[in-house]
Length: 453
Image 1: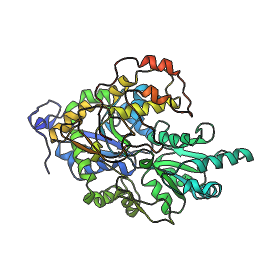
Image 2: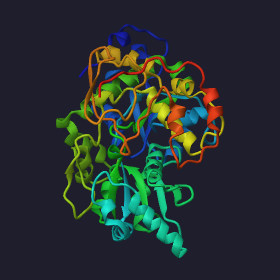
Image 3: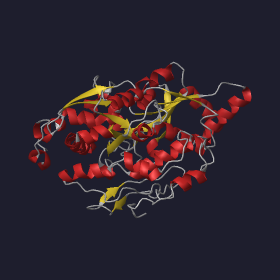
Image 4: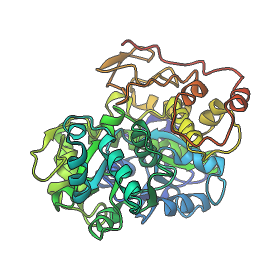
């Protein structure tokens, strides 16, 4: 295969071959199925085709990824979608402007509870568990019972406090009137350790990416209550992130990386390639999980419980379809509303400007245009409007999109993030809404997809 674009062939730079300022790179990843585009780009030669020699570094936690990218040990990484925002805002031990110009996937997570907790939930409210998407109503009854009896709070794990997983779990709990900061104990556990902690009884449930939900189910330790596809159809999950200064110092190298990852994502998303993808990422040096377990969700099926048959879930992992690789600034805005909702941002900020600084569709378009891909011409889109597939016409050519509904029927308008934030009864906002509104009184996003219902 040979996908070196013309801009790389033409360019000559003192830093290295094919116009690249830097050719030897170390990219971090966490062992999850959604590291697939990185693994495919490495194993199938897409990185090599654009003149890059890439080492994939298996990291033990998202905090490791954050720190190593920040100080330059890693050139870039498989990142949680909110991580560039959190790093740029200094929501952690340090502040480092960080950008993403590529989304790695949509969906891929689930909320799993231990078998004993599930049984108690069923005893107290079987009706709440009888249909999908499953609400947290039965869990609320267990929590109320424990409080009445003076029992310990349930412990749920997430992979990182500022993660898609944390916001998904909190969103699901809040919709049932559960306050995740007062009614539960939330702890951080790296993804590969989730099943071990569930087995040991140290956690009662977790929200994590695959294959770790399926591993818990296969071992008879837990049951999946709801996938994040059901929580929010085709939600953003991971991104490829780099420091802003790195992107500015190595623009050709960055563009080459994006080009290779776009080609890898396209190949990964093809249904006929998924069995091969599962075999590649299941290897010990990557995810280190049984191929049969990895293959299940990767090939479009999902099992909620050991005593239930697998169900078809064709879009559990989406890597390229539905403009999955595009870094929507509206996604960044949604994550910012959740950081505000749970008190993680404690000062008024300009939400639109923050999203624009961290999510870089301009860099995406620069790379994707060399491959002749259909490109969104807008940077934002509403969420929650579509219960079925629709066509994005604000693009260089129409792009087929998937549903984007939230399980509770809410809608997110990127033109009014403060109004959206005001609609939640369960929250721990640290900022008055009027102060936030004042900080966001400037121009609203100008490029918002219209879309058809």
